[in-house]
Image (tube, rainbow, N blue to C red; front, top):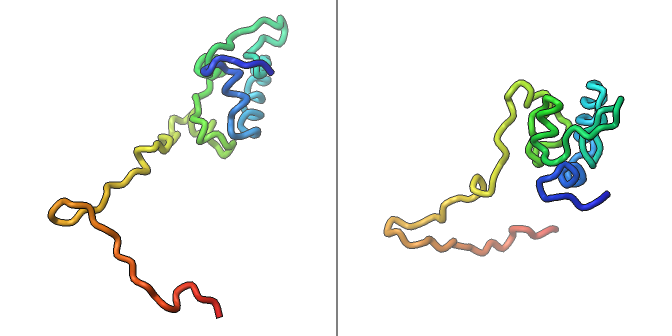
Length: 122
């Protein structure tokens, strides 16, 4: 496998988190008499390359939604995408929480108390 552009199909297909998702995508290509490999999408009869530059091009040609890498697990994400029901992927900003502050606006310091029996196995 060669080194593709960062946004190329080759790069995407080799780094997708789920082998099962890639297999399902390739099955969809076979049903359309196409061949999907890490090098692009090809016509089975002529061997001509149809698309290979970007993930969006490959998915559009197959009539599939572009599924975020974090959702590629072959757990119905392709079908959900076809129904336009894919959830938005979780982003780093979703994970951030505000720093607790006191009424005066200064950051609160956590209060730790020592418990003599907590975590002790007998």
